[in-house]
Length: 176
Image (cartoon, rainbow, N blue to C red; front, side, top):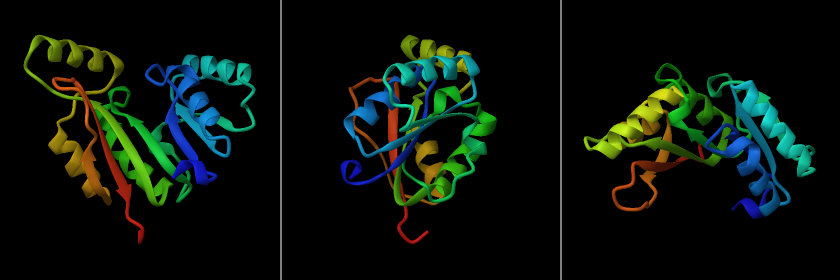
């Protein structure tokens, strides 16, 4: 899908997509793509800008200091990557709604989150996510919220057994 399009992809360029490196890898892999990276943390953006400049990709990677809930674009993106552990619970579902409007019909969202759990590993993950400003989210809640926002084909991507992370994929309906 992406190799044949001139797509634009909004990505968090913060820690988990380390300082623009994911945006750079995608831009290198798909030479016709334009990438938009958004983040609210200025130090992360400064490092991302330096990495993008070092890769000589400033003409294809745009970095913005803004939150997902302030994304102004409408029907502009083919793919969005939401890193829920770095988004406050107060902003998370408004971000999902904004991303839905920002995606082109048929566009996809990848929603990465930490799973809640009862064991020590899960407790450590909950502590990390709380430190980052987010909260773990259950599969049922993510799937329901994405469907409520208007997404279709909602489902969890396969991952390792006992993994404390999950990525849920969903598609904006073609006729919306």
